[in-house]
Amino acid sequence: MKKIMVTGGAGFLGSHLCERLVDEGHEVLCVDNYFTGSKRNVYHLMDDPRFEFMRHDVTFPLYIEADEIYNLACPASPIHYQFDPVQTTKTSVHGAINMLGLAKRLKAKILQASTSEVYGDPNVHPQPESYWGHVNPIGPRACYDEGKRCAETLFFDYHKQHGLRIKVARIFNTYGPRMHPNDGRVVSNFIIQALKAEPITIYGDGLQTRSFCYVDDLIEALIRLMNTPDDFTGPVNTGNTDEFTMLELAEKIIRLTGSRSEIIFRPLPSDDPKHRQPDITLAREKLEWEPKTALDEGLEYTIAYFKALLASGNGNKPQECGVPQKSGIKGCLLYTSPSPRDLSTSRMPSSA
Ligand code: NAD
Ligand code: UDP
Image (cartoon, rainbow, N blue to C red; front, side):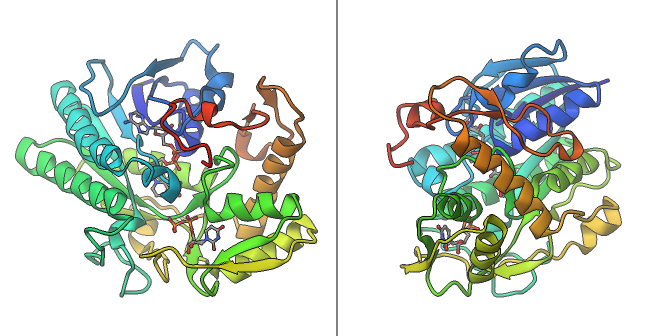
């Protein structure tokens, strides 16, 4: 049993990770400022003696004890990270410095949730870890992309300069239950639009591609990466290699939901990457891992989650959802009438 800290633990990925680690018998400290996360994502863990929650902003130093640190704190969807871009960069950069400083003092192992966005709008396809990327340093996505790139630099310099044990995962688009319903990401947008029989909004011509990984597969990869021998640092791509256009995704979701929604086209946001597909040769070799969940299957679980979310009536009390219990997604807590208040800080725009 280890003492493990998860920053960003009340968010989409973080809450699944906390749950897995608690299930494995570890003591888990979840640290989050609730910017995009919610207490409701970890509500079902609150009574577990192995789980503890701390409200804290990682841009400030933190003094706790831990054997391992998973650094996930950072808003991940474009509308969230672009809302306060300076804070986004600070979260990635100051957050990394603070968590690395903590890991150094504790001699703890530390994993960074990096991103495929370090490749920007890639001109190498699929993207191997050796590709340095194609990022606009002053564009609307830069606060996230460059913040994550700088965090990787810090991780590797702490490793080289101070001998810190680091792990860097470059996470590709991940989806599943507990995605925020209003974060504007394509999977949640399309599912909610389809379930409400509203038009499905494709940005651009819909021929841009993404490769979507189901959350359980991704969490498995992060845990395996943390457990690799100390001489393996990554960066390692973690994602599903099955690539789809946004048109194909929309058609799939219409079919799986049996929706009457029509597809409409809206302008493409600037700097929107045209293609994204991970090369996971390294993950296969070093983590002995590859995703197991096909997009249709993962979408079914995610659709069931959002269906239950929409059907859960009014009121603000969390409720158990009826999501199929794949690999122990227990107690997916739902909230009704999602409001900006659920995003914890009054800094969020009401449209988010
Ligand atoms: P999320 O927005 O659901 O979770 C992020 C969590 O970090 C939230 O709970 C938020 O409240 C918290 N947070 C934000 N700023 C903070 C701060 N300054 N101090 C403390 N907590 C803070 O996003 P997610 O999808 O769960 O992503 C988790 C991590 O994985 C992020 O670092 C993200 O960049 C990375 N990632 C996610 C994806 C994906 O597809 N979901 C892809 C690539 C990388
Ligand atoms: N997208 C879309 N309609 C939407 C939301 C997103 O067509 O309602 C597109 C978006 O322009 C991008 C892709 O879907 O090309 C993935 O967007 P998302 O924000 O989910 O992830 P990211 O762009 O960060 O990979």
